[in-house]
Length: 316
Image 1 (cartoon, rainbow, N blue to C red):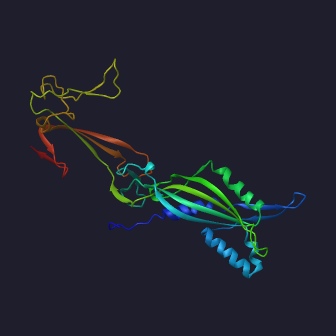
Image 2 (cartoon, rainbow, N blue to C red):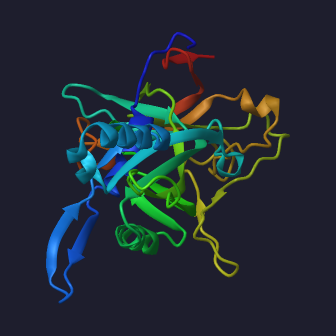
Image 3 (cartoon, one colour):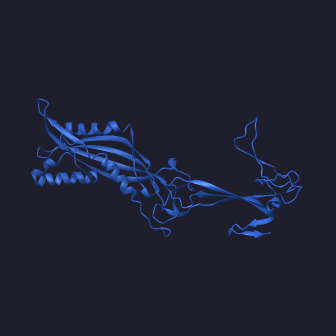
């Protein structure tokens, strides 16, 4: 859509994570002395409840040997609903470094869209005891939610904690019917997975140089601050950032004035008096390296300006 083709396999990962939670459930059977005589690992497959039951009943009526297929479990994703209560800022972005060799770019991705995924887990058993064992190995972990960390977008280092909520549990016991039919007890667990769907990953540029241009007022009639108050100032002591200059330039005190956001248009047209250039040190730093920064201070005549398009200095 919109000329962009991408696939993060998000839903596939949600299904895999959900199924993995229940792939190690075991049932033990004991004799009258309490000794374990049998231990069964309950198999699980992606199939709907009706299809699983149809498969069991069909096989049971044609071949008695398949009666050992119980217990078994099946899971299915039954619905997807938008969740506006978890909506993030639409224009918010997440950034990550491009770790490919020889690259100097970063990757960015807009915030995901929240969706709730409905999952159903069905457990078919032969007797009430088997069903109770499965129930007790699932329910205590959901209170009623259970969180699991999932690596959804590895290249963006996105590994959110996904919440899975157990909504309800129902039991169906087919004790009515002919004696020739196999008894079926069906436990149905309904869950909701609170997930996200992510947009495509875009490429961006890395900021390697920061330029700060300090200008002087164009006319003496315009009043501008003669200093910048630093953030570590207090009510009792005030620290200032004062730019040194020769006496008489631009005024008799040698203190240069710095523009702020409320400066007038006339003042904004004044030339650059000084420039602070900040660059990383070393300049070939990568995303995983420790680095510092280097600052260079330059001073100019008031007739100097800088073209933001080309980045070159021009004469006013």
